[in-house]
Length: 124
Image 1 (cartoon, rainbow, N blue to C red):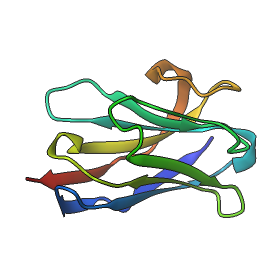
Image 2: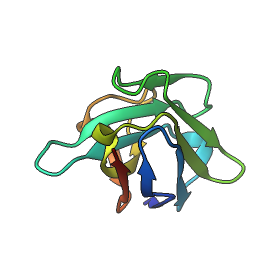
Image 3: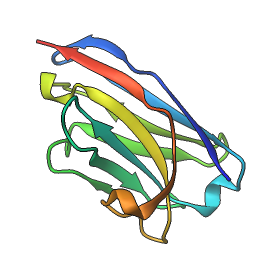
Image 4: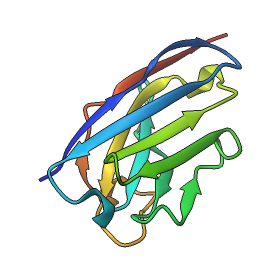
């Protein structure tokens, strides 16, 4: 079992930045990769970014590439999502999740445990 707690969401103007954190407990953090997803009202939950267990490799959705950065601190059992140049279309609830396989997937089915989510609202 893994417990995940996200934080860092909030209201920000377009062009601003936020850093989301996801603290994990319950299993050796360095043994699994992590992902971030988001879900806007009325839409499906979608992939945002993922990172391998050693943090050696990352993957991003095209919509956030170049603006968002995922990182993983195994000593602090925490994964981060630095979000820069935010746009109104980034408004959503953001979720972190534990990857099931060696290489984190872009599919929701590739994740075992999910946090409760944190709201990000970007005003125009």
